Length: 357
Image (cartoon, rainbow, N blue to C red; front, side):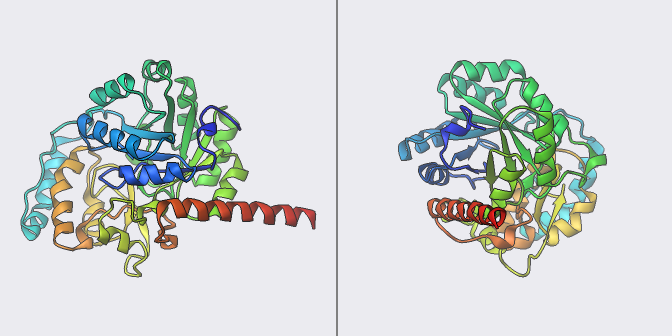
């Protein structure tokens, strides 16, 4: 499906916006320069911090790029459950010689201020995570020439994305690393998400808009599979996390292919919202007890995670990773786009040959 969105980048490869300092301007620019669509992650940054990174990307590339925003979250958390979890983490704070964070420092991630900057000084693409923006927000961006994407984890969420007038949907399968972008944080549905190929196929039959497939993709042959299922492009996060342009901590990069960390699991342990990470000590010990309270738990554990990284202890860090993490390749981001493209083309040629035989 050719569209204003997919015509922006000649290669069907989108670099996922990974918050927490991973998606640096250098990474976004390198992917865009290689013909993909690079992304900045505005999550957990101030509005001014986001704008500084936008200016850095503009100084590094003239190619289109995107910025991702977190939607403000409703305050449905149980304060008593947060207090109980805080007590549970007291031993972690003592071990790492740090303080637990304030869970009440804000629920909106500076959304209004960031949106105002993006309307005043537009970027080519803005994407949204943890919900769906209003029609009014989408229209305000459309008026200044910005295209919009919204994450969806179900066909129903994709229909909502279409209804608000977004230019495309990011279909996020259960295999994806990091936070699931569900529109409603429903505890009953923890771990019950759809696999990527099934999700893409169902969205293709229920919504008429470009689909960017996300979830555990690490090879060009996998990109070929989601394109064959109905996607128009693929979004990769874990594959780019290990690149030199990524701002991920070195311990996080090493853990992706370390035999010690051989599986992933969805957990609320670090942030209070379901997110896929490598299974480590912190996840095992605290995951079963973490309440549904985002971003309160994120703020509560932020200092712990930083202290663990400073201490050189990956067992206390949030090691976000998709299910395909063992396939990570330590290549420069631009070279990785080239390799993925070659693999994608080879997979297409192989399919043509099989059909002809």
